[in-house]
Length: 106
Length: 463
Image (cartoon, rainbow over all chains, first blue to last red; front, side):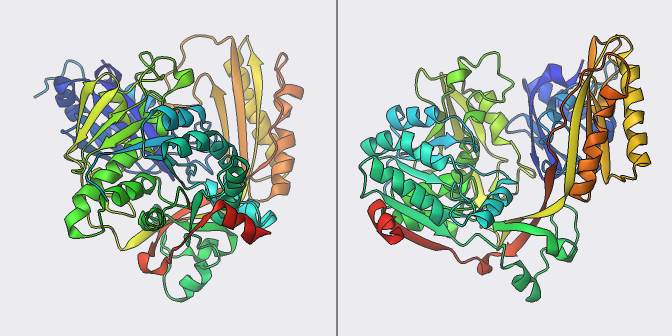
């Protein structure tokens, strides 16, 4: 199972900062994702795409997560060499992150 | 000032957006205001360049065709238009609007112009007075390193100018770098009589949240959405509008029968779009907290928003400084089966070695296998099969334009000196890079000027 199976996603940019919105599909998905969407796990999955720190803001009122990734767009939309200058695909790349299946979750 | 609900619609979310959904809203949306956000982060630098070449340019060129299409319905239905499409030259944009208004027989149309956001020529002076324009992203404390390469500098301004222009009975309000959300917050504050005082921060926070949901137009009504399978007829996408109550709650909807989709997902997607700390979203008009917002579907294409709030506006305003930062040469070659990925590696080495051989030292270079890893980079798994073809993308950034022109020729080599069966891709023209330096300026240094004149008066002033 992947983040994709539990959520809808959308990403955007500001300077060299990408943000990924993860919307849990229901309350159970929100609880599960809260244990999975940790900055270290996200950093490991995104690899070289994200050079700076990652902050995750859980939003229980919306059953959503705001994930802010710094140094994540190769310098920012106007100067990056990436095809996806504005990081629109960062959300789908993140949504491919596998969940820790089989591990006991509390 | 009134307690009656205010209906406010999104006319555009970016420069180049569709115009017909705005016309549809003006015709059938029963709206009071129609707001056009036309600026992205880089736009002001592009417009400033145009203004330097031609003092009559520097506004968004879509303004005239946009007004031409929207004005008949807007004047018929009493819809006021708010936009930041003045860009780097709002007075010139106002003249363009006045010309269209006169042509369409509306000489008394009142056009409000807001100026004062342009800091391009003030950076050095403010720097000398001791403000160093520290970079909000990199933490660099002083702008000195790039001071001689500045192209444009503009402060994101809030609702004050819009409120003043509407107070002076403007039908169209045109500014420069008005913050996207202010295009919506300003009219709502004017409508309900809210002021920048402790009494109203919560409602201003609500107005900004509503503005944030609407400001990219079709992006909250089925565009760029996870709901793409369910959004109907997006080729005639309906743009969103909000019916806002005097307590700051709102219903997001669109014209019945229009294309697209509004549901809790499309609204939540946009509610958090490009926000960083959701409990402290700093905007010129207030600090917004999204931590209590509730999103509920109340009908087909109707979503209710409650629980919005905000805190007192910051003492500083965000400034975006654009500066010259080198040149980019880019090209592609389409590599065919067999061994397409191996050939791509071979082509990458060919180009890298060629650049070295001719003495070009790129500031950065990048080689993508489009279809394999151009988006996800190292996060892309091995495709696990032999592709029919690979789109090989080459990008080289250099300090000078001359180096980029030389590099551009080297990017042709995968076809002419590379493996058999490789299809040419014409290199794009070398392009200039304008990098952005996000920073702050004390609010007290920004002095906005608002003038409201009729189309006829603007025409006379010119001749």
